[in-house]
Image (cartoon, rainbow, N blue to C red; front, side):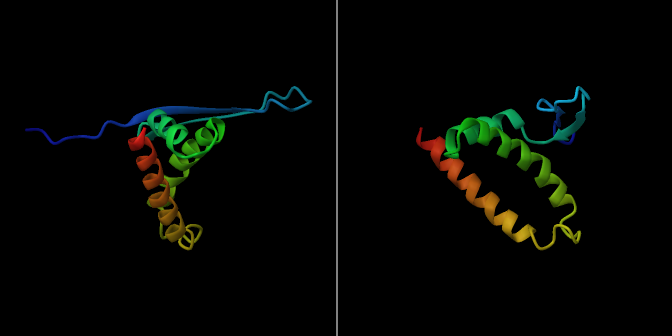
Length: 104
């Protein structure tokens, strides 16, 4: 039996400056791969975090961008002091969402 490989989900993030009085057309765009289904995470946060939908979306995307970078670089000076707090936050968030979604 061949080894099980994880399917990576591929996403494209586009950020556009919509409030600029100048028509500079500034945008940021990048692609990233993630083992998690970002749409499912956002939906679960909308249902179980207690945040309003737009905030849940921002939190879900932000965590999936920051989390893997921090994990891959957890000994880097920028992240080493924050990691224990991030880990505790993630455990609390996952537990809160899981319990809320389960009860619905």
